Image 1 (cartoon, rainbow, N blue to C red):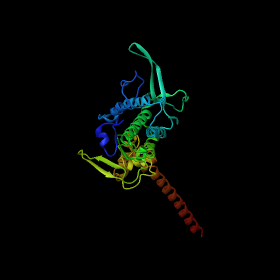
Image 2: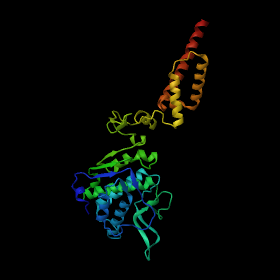
Image 3: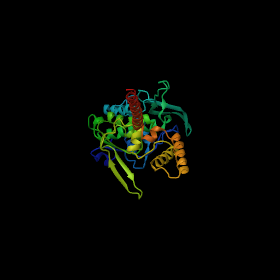
Image 4: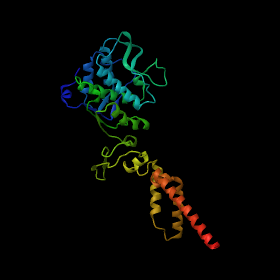
Length: 344
């Protein structure tokens, strides 16, 4: 059960997941029903297109279960552990949907294939979810793109890693490389911040190279782990690396300080904030009527833009409010002293 010669000659398995991914759909039975597991795995390993093919993973899982014995039961404990760990990893990311139950067989309604009518068994593709009875698993292809996509590419990672370390014990802890474009694809923000910690927990030998536009993926990373790519006005791209941990940062702070989003809000409010800052930085106008109009516009813009946005984020807003309160207390104290001195 080995993959292509090129793959098996590599020192470390490399899994590439492009940004474009196809998922599963309730459709007529498999196109590759006659493939054995080695051939099905070859579809995954030899695929060099710019699209991740989820149906190849389904074909490999189905062939593996179909060809195993007895009933079917895996004979290879390492493979069992790899696939189970991949499933648990997905469950940890998508915990609001997937129940803590291993995949089961899913049986489609009777299908017509040529002149025959048969039940289509999708082995391993029955996923127990939290809002349906466990006795009635849902077909993986009926899950959301985020849930099924995450399950399929993590399964693909597990299959490739196991195949590469076929004769090595405990391949789940062995070194592997994951190259993934837009790792946050289709994931809820809560899931986005779980994806990297979950992968490193369940695949401790994994090295991850991921692109992302999500502050929730970046949050929690250490110094030197984030490489920011910026394009200047002439189209040149430069890269910088973070020099401090991104631990405890809010999404707002990451957007402002790392991703270049000065005003992380809707476009109209952001435009109002830019105009307000410009007007506040101008010197008072000599013409009284023009200055009155400027002040009126400033007040109008203030009503559109909230304190957090103007101040530069929640922490800055709290600091500004503290300074205002402190100034008010000091002013009351000064007036009280002045009054006491007059009475004396």
